[in-house]
Length: 355
Length: 249
Ligand SMILES: Cc1ncc(C[n+]2csc(CCOP(=O)(O)OP(=O)(O)O)c2C)c(N)n1
Ligand code: SF4
Image (cartoon, chains in turn orange, red):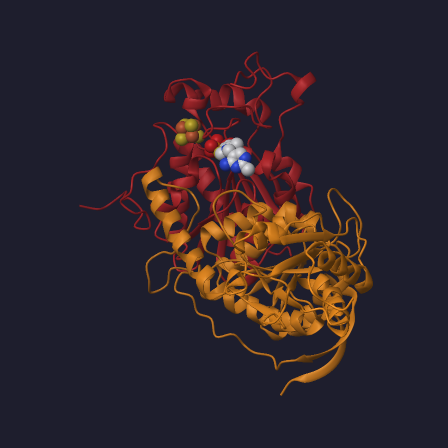
């Protein structure tokens, strides 16, 4: 059975990925993601795995594509600036239908920014950092335990759909020490008929993202779109907390959800009917979570200038009922700060409460 | 009757997508012959670049992937690390390797990646319509050096085979031509050697093939063959720039 340990978020993710059978790691140092790189550097020799410190994230992400093309599990972890450089490979892997896992431990941007917690890369992750019509599943952990669970899940999803999957963490979750239960290690049983292994006893396998003609390329794109639609239908994940009787529902993901949950509990203690939705998959966005909640007000909080809030507005009937509060540059709100915003909202909409 | 020449069985029936007189077709055919003769058809994995050889995957009955522009050495690194027993052959043009992918190829050599590289230097961007490459000759007219390449604005042509030979992780580096039968035979020897070294587990082996691009150079195919001797050879002489030999490591 699993093993209980006290671990830092980044390291929990790295250990879990190794236990999930990912023995190929390529990366480039960047705070706040470097512990994942260092963990792999230390562990790969004894695991008989491969660790390469690449010259750039451009190269590292294309190396991952190479391993994925060979049908094996590969991962790269970086922060927003590195994802910007790896973006071409994300587009490439989606087009080439290559499964791999990318981790973005977000830090405040734009530019070089800072190295603490932030969620400004939501658009980059969800709307696509690279070129062309593609989507990647984006998983947003909010605890060290979810780093572990999602490391396993990310590879399974990537292989199920032959598509890269991103884990969107941040500088806060990455550095937090928490108790986690590590699952037993697995040896993934993966034998892909499409993988490049040498054309032995079969015809040649070819992986290319070069169109043969507009007609052929439209047909191929439609195949990809069909796949993205399947993901959208089947993979939406979220957590709801006391939404049924709520007047106001807070929507937050990742580290913001931890702060928001404290604020929601403060509100409940003060007789305010506040609930919460925590999107776990950011793409596909869990629009199903909003079904049947048409009469509610929504309060979205993120560590950015308002990114996920756009997807919330698309998921509800009345956009006017969605409000937003965010902090920028690596600043984080306190639970009390959010609680006070909720009180303002109650007053503004004349909601009933003994406050 | 004795068969003295036949089309390599490794080639499919698909037509090559190259212009008449293009050096790529010759190099591709040599590659197919070598893979066949070395009995590597079940082990070979070709990494194609972005450039005129982008559709070559259709011509070979071996596993292949077409990497993004300049990134073939990175994809090759991933493949070779995952499949050390296979023969990973990275094929790149000069726009791909010297321009967009200089970091990737140099660092693959620095790490001593154990794959073979065929670098096709035709001193021009063929696929995109004949723009200047870092390998374009001084004075050479291209669509982006319409008055001829000038040192003041574009520097000097890059001599890749010499440059990479200075990297310790590079095991073998040779420059060859494919403009006449003798040179073609020598080119075949060099490419074979590069692949053999890989199968012996040696470091990165690099063959620069100076190749004619009659379309990009704006000349007749026969003249392009001559220009390899009269123009290209001044900047890009034949030579073995590094060979650590069968006993090196
Ligand atoms: C990122 C990116 N930039 C630019 C291009 C456009 N492009 C396609 S092929 C090519 C140059 C190819 O030249 P070379 O490598 O010399 O090969 P050749 O066609 O001469 O064989 C360029 C710039 C691209 N596909 N991707
Ligand atoms: S443009 Fe030049 S390199 Fe490209 S196929 Fe034609 S001759 Fe060959």
